[in-house]
Image 1 (cartoon, helix red, strand yellow):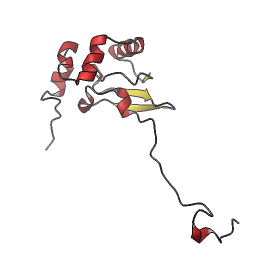
Image 2 (spheres, rainbow, N blue to C red):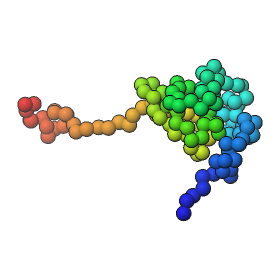
Image 3 (cartoon, rainbow, N blue to C red):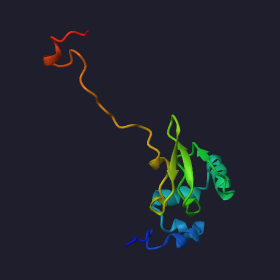
Length: 126
């Protein structure tokens, strides 16, 4: 059985039909205040590319709130080193793009080096 994806009780088609004022009623206070202040120049440029249905959208704008017009699109968000693809789903509505493009990698430790433990002290380096 397929689970129907809902966001605040609304289906994906209902969310895509929302305008900005209606969308602002459902987002958290921090996002709502950010939207009331207006968009920055970088956010305006990203919105223009989204409205033009451009392909291969790359952005440094990690503080952009995810809107209904972004649903289903893949946006490549810069993480400080490279552009990581972020596929926008209904669960991401109201969050920031930067939340889905991690800037740090998880620490992966390997085996201890020679001389790092008491048991490897007598082992030669050759």
